Image (cartoon, rainbow, N blue to C red):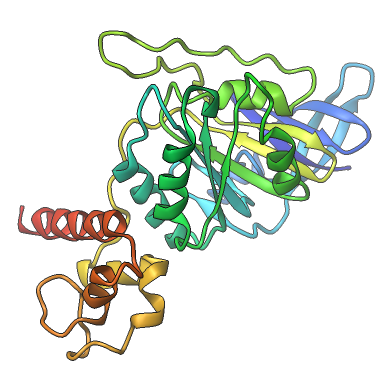
Length: 292
């Protein structure tokens, strides 16, 4: 029997088999000898031990198409980054860090701005303008009115999607709207700190249908730039791609150099100023980290 690991807790792995259900499985001891650990998202082969109780043993981990380190999950083929459009106000610097991270994993990304029932059209237009050339699909949703939820469902169809974003932005509410028979605990917003209280404590894959999965991960509150070499950071900003090689100096990093095609594009409004300034912040962050 084949299936996908949708949750792992205390040495037990819960494997969803299309058309059959979810089995509670243990991993064969041979995996430990091979220094291999099953991951949430793994496609596996398993033997059924008890059909009535839905128990089994994982006997083989099938080849992984991808593997993430933080969180430790496998076979993700796209990312969904959720940020609130209002309270809490979107931390665009954090969003830009997420986008760099997903570029590093070569994952197509959907940016979802939630809670649009609490905002107005100019703010939607501003965010669309900022991220219109980021290489990511940008959508707007409200779990209160239902706006954008069906569009989001269509974008998730046929994929295994990693769901990420800070706490308090409505990730659990979105899951509740997308997934039948699941009722995630939704976190309230702390008035004192203006952030959501964490409600997700472990990675778990939810089944949208037999070909579509969404992986929920513990809420992120901060994220370091996941690039080792500051000179390579520019390759993780899709807006810069068409200007590569058009600067006066070879290897231009688009920060202090004169006759820089990227900086010219920013001045002409071809590249959004926020995205450029965010890039410069990340560049200096890498520079400072290296000096420590």
